[in-house]
Length: 148
Image 1 (cartoon, rainbow, N blue to C red):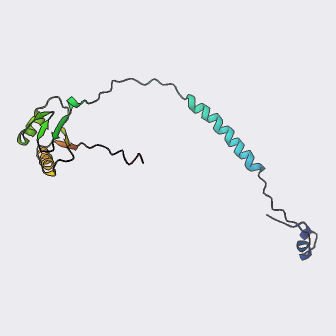
Image 2 (image 1 turned 90 degrees about the horizontal axis):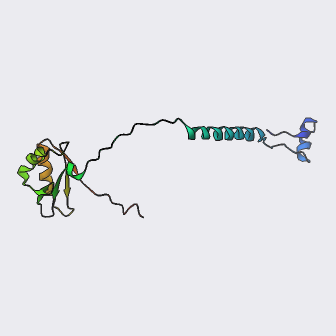
Image 3 (image 1 turned 135 degrees about the vertical axis):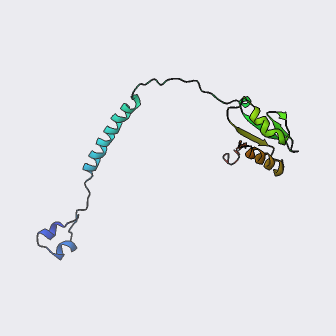
């Protein structure tokens, strides 16, 4: 808020035109006080948050599925099928998956070479789906975009 010193004395226009000054300074002292108080509060609470409560959580043995525990169908470039590294006919694939006692779930991971035609992959997926077996396609991430 600005006001003129001469305008209070009854100078009118003359005070503004000839040497009258306006006070347009902002008082920042209350703002600095609030900022310093907030800084002190955050410094104190940050230390208290680092210590926290000391709780010992129970330790459990994590179980990770290994390659031997998974159902994996490999398809070569020529369209040959391998179930867990053993050659298999597509007509016997569902029976081989259901007979595998090592695998805990009825899910099959399908790995195919990128040069494999789509027809053998589609046949394997259709055969496994008809046998009520879950299908997961194995891919590899492309990290070349993140390196740029």
